[in-house]
Image 1 (spheres, one colour):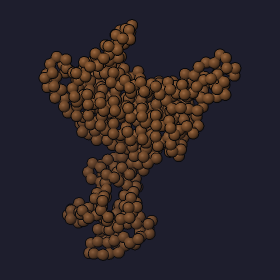
Image 2 (cartoon, one colour; image 1 turned 120 degrees about the horizontal axis):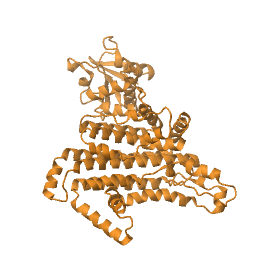
Image 3 (cartoon, one colour; image 1 turned 90 degrees about the horizontal axis):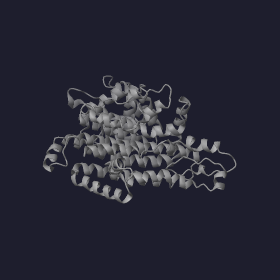
Image 4 (cartoon, helix red, strand yellow; image 1 turned 135 degrees about the horizontal axis):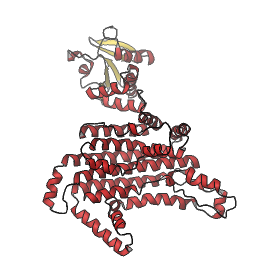
Length: 499
């Protein structure tokens, strides 16, 4: 079983998109420019995109009868073939048989594939079948989303479409790499389990790895759930010219900074690198307990390594990859949730270019203490307590006695803002305790509650200098100076904000 899974990692790698699928300059523009005006003696285009790009049809192309859709179909059919044969590819059924018997006839080949596939299904434990089933469903969703994207991009111009195509190739390769990572982890679990010898023994051995299997299932669920949202976000990213413009401008900046690589490579790079950061963090955690993980993960291609090999001078990405971000599986899962959450929120909020710049800066080892708005919204969501209440309580935090603190006085009748324990530590670390950056979170909380037309109350005397300081002072000043509201006292320890 472990050997089948190992072969599956290599087999999947062969189905990934390469520069012929994303590099519009190398595989189309350069060939077109070198071809003679006379149609005879044309060098055929080697470009195989997955999105239909109208710029194929030059005047000379139309004379010679070249069909751009045929070229596009080559790229899209590659993805279709991968998805339709995922089970056979990912368990290396086809790959291993072809490698062992390259001269086998078609009839015998398909008979053996059918036999081996059924053998694997008979002996593969339900927990592992379940993981494969979810991966299979995920990649079908990827194919469906890509086909949908072709319906609304026909009015885009060729060069921008080519960048979108390159970016999409990167996204899909990134998702495939995460799928490979999951298979790496499964291989680690089943490496020493004798599946074909004794069913009871196999189940007992598998039970010893239950915690790892549960992590893998949780990872797959998280991966599948967020990948669907990411694909929806990519669809809206391509359809919204304003959002894509920010990404496109960032790509142009990278091209100017690293002259040896064109915009299409960087579009591909940005599509895949976010997933590779997740991939490397997972691998860094598990390599602490298994040399097999390191061995197999080396079979998964890395776009960061490719960038360095292609001569992106001044770019040293490898030193910032593979950092261990967690010491327990639970912590790793929390980190993964946070990474996916930020990505989805940035796409949803139309701030994907800012997200990419943020990630790229960190990848280069640059210090980033500024909170982007998508990060602020996530932090506000986590810090908002009793969100369904129609009243909001602001006030001073009092450690002791607790009864005098604003969050205690808010009770269950008021919405209030509180960054508890780990969340506060995360914010302090991320902002280097910059009070102005942290204030962005409090301000966004007030804006969201005001937009919901809620009534604001204060739990501590806004005129008492012992209380009128810190973030409480900023909240009062924002409500009274910036928003021009007033304050009235309504009880001994309660004030109301009047609009």
